[in-house]
Image (cartoon, rainbow, N blue to C red):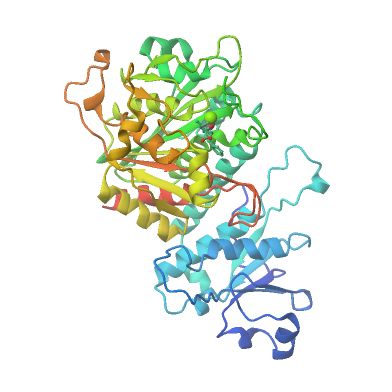
Length: 505
Ligand code: BES
Ligand code: MG
Ligand code: ZN
């Protein structure tokens, strides 16, 4: 496999120079800069073919002083901007420089991270799903990237390994989400999991199929998948650390390989894009893939996803059905299109049985989340303020846009049933749907609420849990941080970083 970073630099490489308002005069003649209106402003790119150079501006001006944490210079976006500006050219060999100069006030560690994100952004922006088009229509390039001095000193073996891991993880997430639902169904995903982790002795795989799920009593998950020709599968992937296990993180991803809505079928064009309803599991797959290539010393990763398709047939589950979940809690179905939380209910309860220190779920769960926060922001909810703060800090450090949304206890009665324990939709269905969905999920990470005797839980525990509603941020119709539309791969970087932070503590 070709390396994502080459040493020493290619002699024929196009120089990519990061330029701030202060350093602009050192890199481009005054009159040329004037002609091109190039000032070193954030994301401004000047392609100079006669000098075989590309300049990219880094200076961000913000006149508004606010509590906004999402307006930092993001070198991932800058790397992408360079590639997007040269997409229609034949340029594919680059040498990055100027980064240490424009970030001279920062530590070597911070410069190294910025350089890694810049190079990752370049590679990600040059990727596209081109399985279904002829080569001459594809804009995908296999870039050759190197760095100049003094940047070269920032590149270590660990840095390279992490770059490769993140690129493999984010690409996998994007590929799964962008690909079509007939190719990405529960059984083909199981095959993908087998092939992505093949030969890795630190990874253990378990697939639980329909008959076994029935025996186990995963009544909520199974109801959702019942009408599909593709049987549901629960995947459980364990990544062992190199040393003794001291922490366990459970990653749970919503895995609706298609969401037609069920009998409450999606109308008016809302079905289109529901291939991305496995975005949560795609995110966790990418995260697990990256973590399988990074050596964690004491942290064991459990990735759990319940894969199913929400379809329409004579045996579809119905509104009015009362489902018995794996946890034993019963759920009255109000709307068959609120299916994600039903599959997550069983996957989360299963996750608690692994006795993890942290549970994180990611799900393209609610349209309400997107309406509230736009398609750029993830909603972060959870049941432990320290854990939420730590996660939020990680997201800020990676500049992956995430907003903490509280789950007020007074809204819990919205999802409490009359003739069942729970309802799969808030009573005021049209209001705060992302919050009531979060409250619903919270019932499946607290074993004190479980009523399934056969789980054999002797000392019930309430687990630390965070919920990421990525309905908007997993897939953008408009342009994302990479300057393209479609799957974003957002969230993978932060989850990888969080696991590394847990491992370091
Ligand atoms: N998968 C959708 C949520 C979704 C909508 C994700 C748009 C990304 C973009 C979820 O299963 C769903 O259908 N939610 C409905 C529930 C409602 C009909 C009760 C929603 O939020 O509109
Ligand atoms: Mg739905
Ligand atoms: Zn869904």
